Length: 311
Image (tube, rainbow, N blue to C red):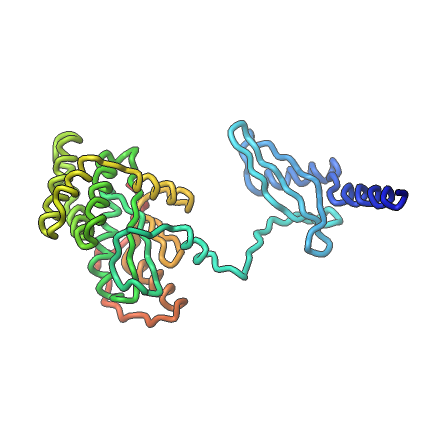
């Protein structure tokens, strides 16, 4: 019994030693340095947490909490045992590939594809049919990039309509998904046409007229590809947007905030980049995957400054 009590007391003592409050003087100096270094707004409260042993010799670990009335964030730091140095450090796990881990979070089941199914480089594009910069990206990817890279890259499209500003983008995405449910090529013909002719839909007066124009385009693709028109019309009429919303939620978790956003083997590309810069990302992905890089034609003069994401 006495031995058990001694062990309990020793355990409590050790637990008490595992985290120690930082002295008021050191806490004050840490707060001043953090405020000055990161130019924190005046309404941000800085709270220095207790110091704990770290895996780095002569340094303890501590969290600094930055908080306002609306949000709170804990930021890890290291502080030297002599209280003279504060380090903000990001620990990276080199045993895992961050790009590969990101790609695992993207659900590509049932999505339209272009390219070789088992290509070692996969490019996933979060697209908005009403976004002019998406149109620019799409027309650089197809045919230019697609023609140059051939079966080296698999292209996959997902939905991220900017519903706050693009009133017909979700409707177009639902129609496209109705098409791909029956035929992969029908999706791409619809996507190619819309991205090349957004002005036709925009020229219609009012959303109802624009929705009608989108439906007619989808039905035309259904006829062209000999789809089950009754099934297609029923899908278009229902306008079920569950798949679109799921894609949007997924994109949000990946840090997508605007369109176009492309993930090339996990490397994020924001906005409609010039052709030369797009090639750089694709070539880097191919090299890392051990795939030969294709020869490139000279970039057209129109591939100038990068366009911002969204519009």
